[in-house]
Image (cartoon, rainbow, N blue to C red):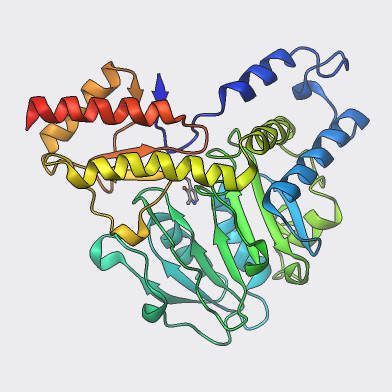
Length: 357
Ligand code: PLP
């Protein structure tokens, strides 16, 4: 089947096969990676190799720390303000969807969270433009959600902030295309879309932003402690980190992030081109903000949408139902979705359109 889940989502078959082949005995260690002490020599090499590969693939400069944490991207909604909203006790938030809304709401507990812009009025069908931003010159950071998983929108520019660090939630677009890490203060992402299994959260943070957190910040939520302990203050999500290493090998084999972008652009174009000429299906997302990863669409008729979801599932396309807050359908076509998956989906949509137009 082709799995269009928004996350956890598909992994490359070759990654799963490699993990399966090493499941009982990793590299003649006599045990599974799952059974290994995180302080063992064998595991130390796994975590260091994973970090090295991530640095290579994403081009992460030396003055950035890479952290392997838990708690999902959602814990970062709290951890970011507790650690970074500390100088002026103020941060700007762009609310472009559901997750950035949650991040904005959470930040209000820790200081002055200022709404720099929102596209809520048009049900998040576009990303606020630079001209729409009301930025604070004294903000400790600007928080954005770079790809809105639920609404299927993505930034086509990076806000100009006059030196205020950008904190970006890249949960649903990390590793999908090249990124200039230097333009960000912090990048974070839950692993369960483009990086591996749920349970791992990757944080990439510029060294000078690892400051003193707010008083009484729990030790597990202090960036300085996580950095000082190389993500091993306690037991890290060992198996998920190992899988991320395998995923990064696969990304390299696909031509790195440039190769991934070409692969993803081709897949998304096939789907959007079809939607643009279809008389049955449409997407509400404006052209300039269409996500490469999450494609939302609908017929405009709820019964027909439900029929499509049901029939598509019977034909081996799983998880095409849209998020409950948007309705319709959503095809998440992350890195691991092969071109054949999108080709088969478009062929099925054409067939459905002919029968139901
Ligand atoms: N941010 C974005 C953009 C997401 O897509 C998600 C989950 O789908 C989250 C945050 C929440 O992630 P987690 O479930 O890892 O907390």
